[in-house]
Amino acid sequence: ETGVTQSPTHLIKTRGQQVTLRCSSQSGHNTVSWYQQALGQGPQFIFQYYREEENGRGNFPPRFSGLQFPNYSSELNVNALELDDSALYLCASSLEGSTREAFFGQGTRLTVV
Amino acid sequence: SQQGEEDPQALSIQEGENATMNCSYKTSINNLQWYRQNSGRGLVHLILIRSNEREKHSGRLRVTLDTSKKSSSLLITASRAADTASYFCATGSSGGSNYKLTFGKGTLLTVNP
Image (cartoon, rainbow over all chains, first blue to last red; front, side, top):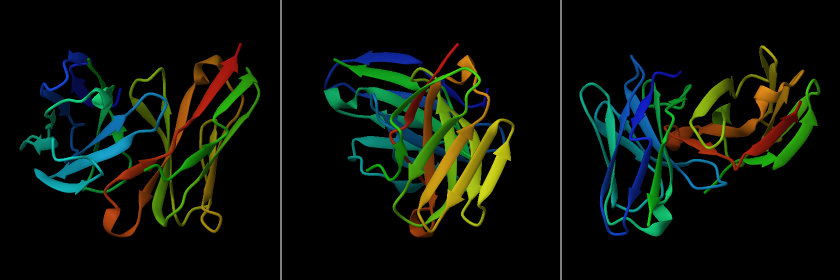
């Protein structure tokens, strides 16, 4: 158990819809990163939030957006869902906006039909 | 894009044998981390090795890092059936992009009882 919790665990959405995924970081961690993992691939960095500000972004379009709250929990929002957005979405918490040990949640499996 | 490349892509061994997985990367790094993933669920942090370290041990795990060759290896000794999982290396980059981890595609390890 890492102390990082994600909800929901599974989700099915229709193409064109919008989705919000949630993550609670490990106690004491002020940084949350989001990753997308397609089947058979390694996780790909989406973005990171540090002290409620975006601290870096990967090669994902603007319809992927996020938010971090004062308690350091975070949301990932995806608009205008596409079939290729079907993946496991992983949240990781860490300290100080860096790549020190990152602790991952169990992920949200998103299926877009 | 994926920075790391794990080798082999799949490895099948008998319980009690040692398992060695390799990882190569392309750019300068602050650290390199190894993660385990069971059945497409969350990533479990195994070990972090910093760029100025050459070898690190944790229980049955031994990690080496050769920054001149941009490569790392993970050795699991006396393997158990419970070690069956996918193993990923992830690099934390130096410089301006030190907020993200870049993962390889992983090695699928199967330990047969």
